[in-house]
Length: 379
Image (tube, rainbow, N blue to C red; front, side, top):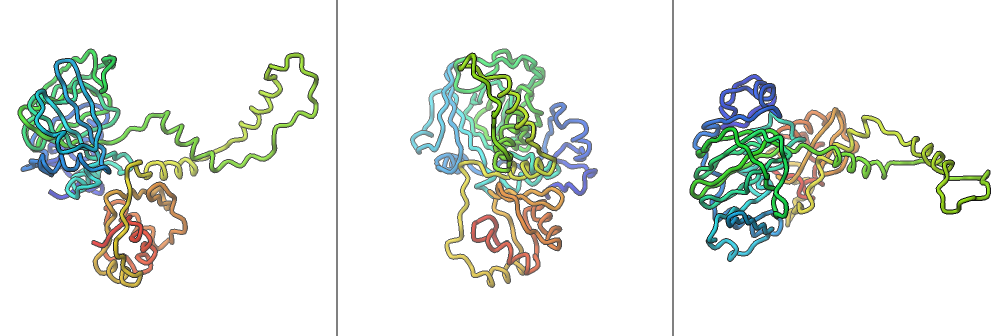
């Protein structure tokens, strides 16, 4: 199965049940669920239970262990020890976030959804559950494709308007879940759900499910991030002054004159779309707090790297985020300065496809520092 291409939006895809990307986005994306039988033929998963549990023991991976005994839920966060995965008496679930950052197969799976902008992508998560295991009826604040790997999972979904949560639990469980549809998904089946669509998945026997999530940032989060971005770029001249100050009748009072003068100062704060563009570029490519890059142990010299890159090509590290807007490029939370006009097309290809065949030598030389920092590798 080859990755879908955003350049062919009208080609039907088995991944989307015979819909083209254009049809899917127009009819289902952020509108309504879609069940796709045999979306990925022959798919049974990307890793074994043991390999997943090993990932949950890593300190550079976000992982959770959820158990349920009747109406009592317990949540623990990793990294875990081997003893944590001995059989539990009650249904239990293990979840590993950011699988695409540590497993090439998960990164490749992500590329099947490249008809959706990379700027919207969050990560690939995998969940393993014992018979009857799950995380309860809940809703997510992002678009998600739920691809069934090994085993079966029974899904119930519903467009709940009441999003009241059960109080006092360590996880978000809907208090009044009213499912309207239900299915059992087999290996290779997939379910798409828009944001805030209630769902509850329960394992039928032991099973594993892969979730490809696309973030929908809250306005509050974007506003806070933009204000942080803006504070480093503000340059307001002048200072507060009151040469005509009169004796205070109420020393404890903040006067209307002070409020008016400060309001006038703050009204001088300005931003434009170019600043918002740069904010989004840096904000959306900023690595998550637990993400670190590994420099090569014995890096090549610049000359050897350039020769090898021209011959073999380059690929971005799975943890690297490279986005662009017009001719501006953003890499791992920073704006790239000094991109030459002749390199724009090649860097756009690298951002789109996450690999670049036979870059010109001058560009490869500029990317040598990325190689040394672990941001990209030779093919």
